[in-house]
Length: 331
Image (cartoon, rainbow, N blue to C red; front, side):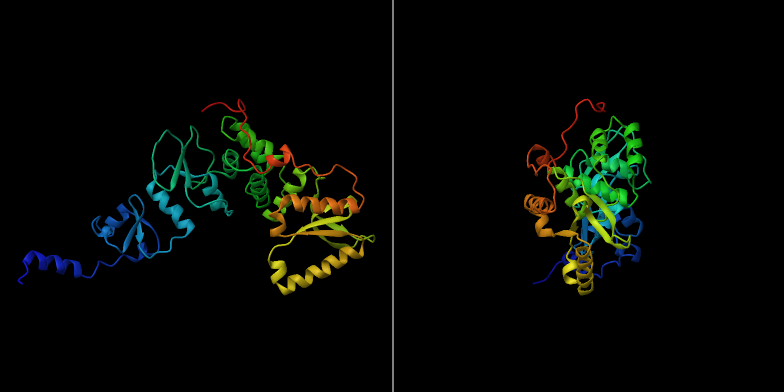
């Protein structure tokens, strides 16, 4: 059967070698404007070798988009004055909490823009920022409106330890922004933070012990023998009762050298009359049982204070902070 010239033209066009994608666009996302500048038309972008990440933002279909590049792609879809905030900014600072999407941005004006995978916040005054995302203090305040108390303690400890913020800088930010949602709540959590915590799991363990009503342990302090010789540094230390609470990550079990060091270390503590409680991920997943185990050890070593209480205070640790009406002005 004879085919029309139009059909042959269409077949020929479909079989043409696709226009090469410029090298500077192959390993990242790019905007429609960048594509056009590189000679890639809107129609070409409909080809299966491309995919749309966000409206008017594309990449090669087989590109593995990293978290950082996903955030960059979202920026290409937003106004130039948008800044990362909330868990998205926290991820940029180096701490992953929650899911990647929706990505959180904020603009200093009343702008209603609905994009799947992006949450756009609005504020009357942009917090201090570096041109990319808002300051750590603003991040912590925004998280205080949504996250559980235990997560805020863990994140706050991390922010202090990494020097992204200090208790003092958080106080100054809150004082200048009392009207921001989460400001009063964030300041209340600040009293629970400890910059000496060396890991999120240490922070989580400490919070669980304290909110059960057990004494507040010292954090990462030196322990010496009777001659003043350093024996080691304890994660969480109940000095009066000579008890250590140590979080043991997976590396302690699977790294032979670390395992051998742990044996020597705990042996040295025992030799000067100290006991210890090892906390693992599995034990941390059963917080009540972990608390009762620590309490039993404390009692065996002479503790006669209050027993753990798993009531309202304990439950508050695993819930978002209650909002404080009147603590800040309505924006």
